[in-house]
Amino acid sequence: MDPATTGSVIDRLKDRELVVANLDTSDRRKVLVALTNEGRELIKTMIPVGKNISEMTLSGLTEAEKLTFISLLRKTSVS
Picture 1: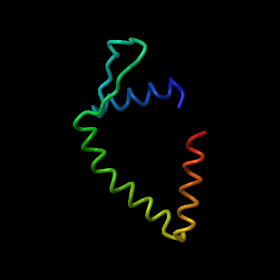
Picture 2 (picture 1 turned 135 degrees about the horizontal axis):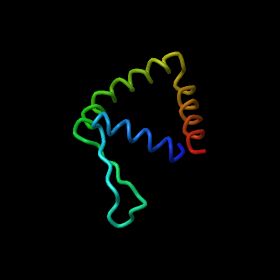
Picture 3 (picture 1 turned 90 degrees about the vertical axis):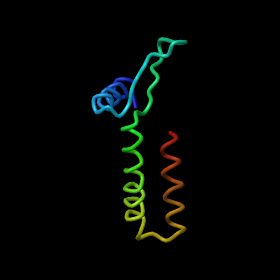
Picture 4 (picture 1 turned 90 degrees about the horizontal axis):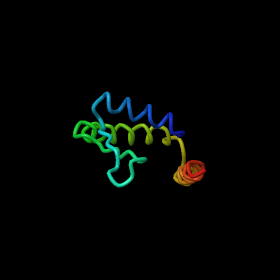
């Protein structure tokens, strides 16, 4: 994600009061972003939803195919 996109995502999360962002006192070029209580609660509710979607997506694959698929996803996310 490029810096402009990252900044706009953070701004939208701040508008929804899901994160707070503050300048790093030791390096003013850095912005420290932290979840608010509302952000933590949203994550708690969304993790089961994400797991359910993953299970539905992979339901037609064998265990070996699931492992291969997940391995390939990890490999592509690194680059």
